[in-house]
Image 1 (cartoon, rainbow, N blue to C red):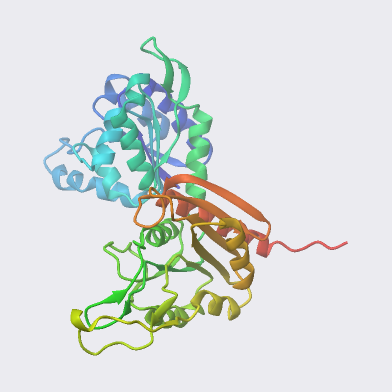
Image 2: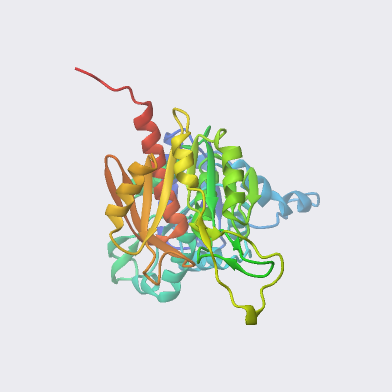
Length: 406
């Protein structure tokens, strides 16, 4: 495997040479990309001698008159050839460029161009690390799926004491290896994800709906893609741009969602039902808009329980994960739903909290299986999606492990 090692301008830049060597010891090809500031601390020749690879130091090569076209698209070539991008050390300026989507040098352009896993190991002055702007940029990057290797605490090169020291070399390498391994752990799985709300028509203008934004389901689909899965996303109405899944199916009502899911369920090895499907639908839909003066008196009937239907009809080996949006008795309600609907796991969260759940950028909750519960603290929905998929991987391993009997 080949990775790109981004080296940015800080006193810790010299440690990148050791990181490159440790990666080579793992059998990994390393192509170093240096910012202009990094070259003030360590020379490109050092990395060229260590790695045996070309060291990229500028956006446009000036070596010969024919190089301009090649160098102008080189970041695309590198982006497509690497299995991961590691930036160590990552300065506050680099984190800001990444978070804001700026592409004013080769490294920041490479970050935008690659779809490979990204790991950053920040190193900077303690006050720079603690600054609200830096912390906001880190939250943005984590929400996008970037792995952050937290800096250590101690004496810094500037003479101050606190957080900001580049993490230990072994910790950085292990974080990268774990992220790369994770990026392939769903390869061979076909993940079916439902997302968003359903709209149940009352008349040609009005409908019954709920507050689901679809963000959690879209995050699960995105995270599954990044881990090598083939993904089908069935979504109710949302304002979101779908990730680049293999199949995207837009539906509106609960009946349409049921039809789409049942048609694809047999091909899925893992199904994750994040959609907030309406429990009730009008018994009859008015053919014309109901006038205010006439008033509305709704006769509601239950919709099909899609999750229970899937749970009762799944084939051996299929994994089925449900969601439970609750406002009280979270664990008790989730456990009952887990058993009643024949699920492998259920994710329960408290949607009465204003800063998590429906419409929010963050979420929290618990993943409950027959063997216990995992608490998920408040984090971005993409991060939470990663933890949910970690549970899927564990369930698959447990399913495939032969049982030993006395």
